[in-house]
Length: 177
Image (cartoon, rainbow, N blue to C red; front, side, top):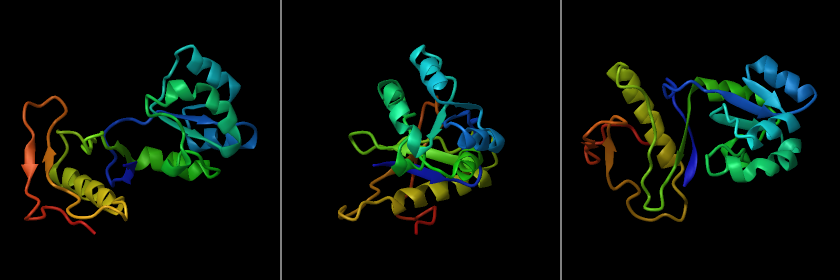
């Protein structure tokens, strides 16, 4: 399972967005606020090891060019993918959504999902709203073939903290659905 959850207060990380586009779409991406825009030149920079972005978008016509660096971007989780909304012709809304607050998540092979939902210094209300939105997105992403209890347990912790605090799934501290 993998996907994108849109949260109300971003994830606390600054999004540096690279866009594979050319011509009119390149100008549109630059006007919408993309940090890096290119085509073959961007591929060359990535092949040289210059990956100075944490979000990558592409137009559908550029995918054959992006395929040249798929083995570099794929393992880093940066490869544009139509299912994740990172291959699109509507670059303006994709860039705005990336800036506003989208959290990419991916389940490990054991079904564990790790995601940053905010910063420890934030007010509790902001963290709770982000957690509610994230859990709702996970519940909505439940495959139709999955039977039984979808969430067995949930823990929240700081990135480098010593402990994780369990969330009581019976009390439903957050709204799902």
